[in-house]
Image (cartoon, chains in turn cyan, green):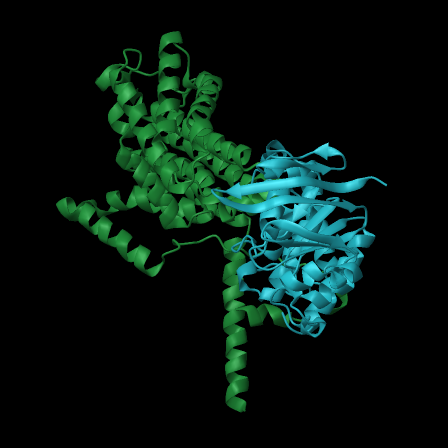
Length: 263
Length: 351
C-alpha cells in the first residue's frame, strides 16, 4: 500500500530555534492520523512546511510518491493537499457560499472571456459551482444561512464552513489544525462523525488536536511531538502507554488525561 | 402584547419597503435605466459645454470602473493608475498621427501597450504587499508622466495635438460632440458591464479571496501572484481605453493631464462610491467629475465646498455611498426545499 503522504526527517529552524527537528511519519489512504504535543511543540510549523507556507530547512515531503518539498502553497494545493487553519482563515466579508466556492477554484470550467460574454459555458459552470457549494455545506451538516457574509456567523458555524471549503478542494489529504478548539460537546461529537464520513470519501486526514478524548477515539495512529522532536508514533494504546509521552505531555498519571468535555 | 405585535407588523412593513428598494437597487435592470438616462440627457441639455462635461464624466466612469478591478475587487492600492490612461492616450495619439489612421484602428496597439505596461509594473511590484505597492505605483505614475514630458516621440511638454478622430463613416463624423457623447456612453457602458461581470465570475471571486486573505486563497490552490497580475492587466486595459477616448475627445494629449491629482481623483471616486461595488463606483465617478462643475457658482470656493462635501460623506458613510454587500439569494438545499416557502427565521436573527 503506497502512502498518501510521506514526511521524511523534516526540519525547519527560525534563527536559533529548531521548530521542527527531524519529523518523519507517513499517512496511508483512508487513515486518520493525529499529531499531538504541548503548545510550541512544532505541530503547526510542521503543517506549514507540508503545505508550503514555510520552506523546510531540510527533509522531504512526498505526496503519493511525488516530492512537494518547498513548492508554493498553491501548487501543493493543486497537487492534492488541503487544510484548515488554527485560527479561522475565512474570507470575512464574503458570503458563506462564496467561501466554499474558494475551494473549487481549481475546477476551472470558465475563462474570463466566458465571464464577460456570459456564455452558456459560464452559466453552466456557475450553476455547478453553486450546487457543489450547497452540497459540501450539507455534507458538513451546516444549517445556518448561506447567502450572508460569514463574519456574521457564530464560531462553530465558521469552523464548519472552513471544513466545507477545504473539502470542496476534493484533495487526497486533509490537514485539520485544531478542528475541535472552541467547540462544545455536541459540536465535537458531530466533528467526530464528520471526520469518519470524510474518510469514507477516500480522503486521508491529519489533525492537530489537544482534545485527547477526540484524538484517542478518532485516530488510527498518533504522532507525538515535543520541542520540535518526534517522541512517539503509534496506535492510541501504544502512545498512551509510552512513558516518554506520559511524561512530556499527558502528565504523570493516567487519570489526568483530559476527557471529552474539556478543551 | 398588542404593542409588540404592532411594532412587529410595522417592522415587517418597513422591511418590505426596504426589501423592495434593495431589490430595485440590486436589479440587473438598473444598469439599463442608467444607460437610458445617459442617452436621454442630450435631449434635455445639449450645450457644447454640458456635452463636454458629460463626455469627460463618462470617460471618468470608465477609469473608475477599471481602477475598481484593481483596488475594489483585488484590494491592490494603486496610486498611479492614471499612468495606464497616459499609455493608452499616447499610444493611440502617436500611432494615429504617424500612420494617419482613425483612432479606432489604434485599439490593438493600445491593448498591447497597456498589457505590456501592466506587466512591466505589475510583475516586479505585485510581490509586495499593500503599503509598499502603493508607494511603487505612485512612483510609476510619476515616472510615466516625466518620461512623456521628456521624450521627443511624445512631443515633450507640449504633447501631441491634431490627433485624427475616431472614425468617419458615410458622412457621420464621430467627432461631432453629440455623436461622440453617444459613442463614449455606449463604450463606457459596455466596459462597466464587462467589469461587473468579471467581478461575479470565478476570476472575480479569486480577486476577492486574495483581497480578504492571501494565505487562505493560496491554500485553496489560487496562484495569488497570477491572479493579482490579471487584475492589474485588466485595470490597465480599461485605463488604455479611457486613454483612447480621452485622446479622441480632446484631439490632443499632454503630460499635464496625467498628474498625480488625476490618479487621486479616480481613486477617490472608487473609495467614495464603494469599493468593489460597480454601481457605487459609477455613482462615485459621476459625483467626483460632475460636482466641481455643478459647484461652479461658488467660483473660488468651489474646491473648498467640494472638499468639505467629501469629508462629510466619508464621516457619515465611511464605506462609500454604496458599499459592496456580501449577500446572495438564499437558495435552499434540495433537502430543505419543503420549508422554503416559510420565511427564513435565521436570516432575521442575523440582522
